[in-house]
Image (cartoon, rainbow, N blue to C red; front, top):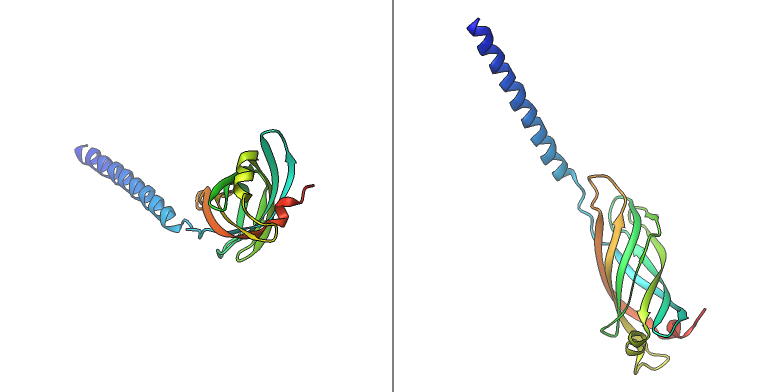
Length: 169
């Protein structure tokens, strides 16, 4: 009788330790399998003033988003902050869903909001034909499973013509 009891406890403990070992192995395996995604290249390709209110300007911007990864990126939204000539200019979010193929590119339109004071500060002293410097930073919010991060940060800078800011729709 005692031998049966000892054998049952032994096999019960083996099953417990095997289950624990398998669970830990799967956890570490998933952590090493998860994909580290490179930040996308994001550039502002157009800015259009849509509406100017007493204290706020509404602008439509277009972002060129380049996926530099070897897997498709499934975007469910973007948030960003835009600087013009070194000063805060506008910020916004969009829930525009899009898929970017591996090593592919897409244009994502979005609306950003700025105070009228920030607009004036951003373009003050710039002649009509001059280029203005911009910096954009934010996050792409991703669809996906446990192996894909929920968001990827991006940051880039470049130059734009002031003509795009002068045109209104």
